[in-house]
Image 1 (cartoon, rainbow, N blue to C red):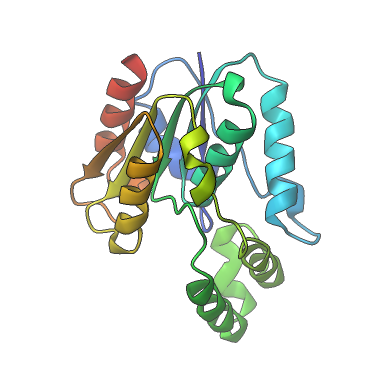
Image 2: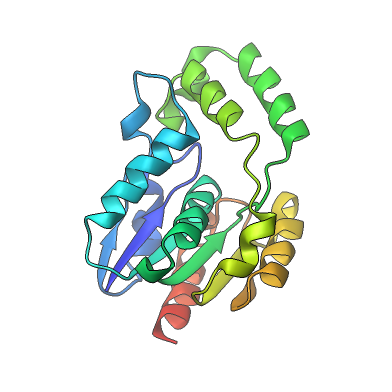
Length: 204
């Protein structure tokens, strides 16, 4: 069985290195930003590339995503229910906080370009990507997620705790677990605890 681990904004595939060591089977950690580097970065383009790549794999798949990666995994599970065996969503919102994104983009515009290097995208690409996500809203679709789903959230990730509760309430087969001591970047803050939670979920 193939498990795909999807990183968040500000991360790259290497953010999964420690957690991936504790998982079983074939593990893929794609670089989500590769399709948009050097061009007009948009959520739509990232999702279309991801969905196309998934279609080229033996399915069903196990999808696990953090934040942006979780949004991609959620949309794919909604549009290709037959292609997803299990879904794990970490620190994932089901609707974009427009006000927060606008404030975030205003701050981004004031930062020097070098501040964005660790994200793997340029300053303009990051601002374009976040702007393209403002209208995403999956709240009305959560009831159509048909596969077993594990909703995870770091114990210190206060910004996404409400979203975690919304996902658990809206997705029919969803379980919710908190990762002790972790903030938003659970894959970096608590990779061993995350791997154990995923192992137990996928085995079940």
